[in-house]
Image (cartoon, rainbow, N blue to C red; front, top):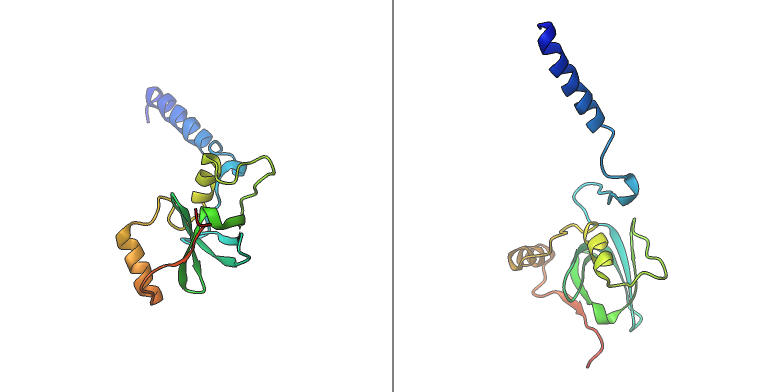
Length: 138
């Protein structure tokens, strides 16, 4: 390599080396281990406890895989929710946009479940329809 060509190569090497140590801080990175969603525990206002893998956070509720069954807990039914690797502080609104975004990052399907995907999940679990935990009647 000519002396003229060594300086651009050194500059590129320095930039690439710097890229290896910069990026998203660990505390804001949603750790994902494999293709599974975080383990989640939902306690409902009716006293039911649903524990399973977080599949998605939708517009109306939380979808979990509990004991090989697809369960949707409507937001109105939720008393508390605990999601692995996500802490909710006392001043944090449970269903705020920030919470939904952070929780979705820990779901198996962070962008939601399409009707086709839901059909495949139900078929795989041997269900005709999702098990639903409705919110309070209005």
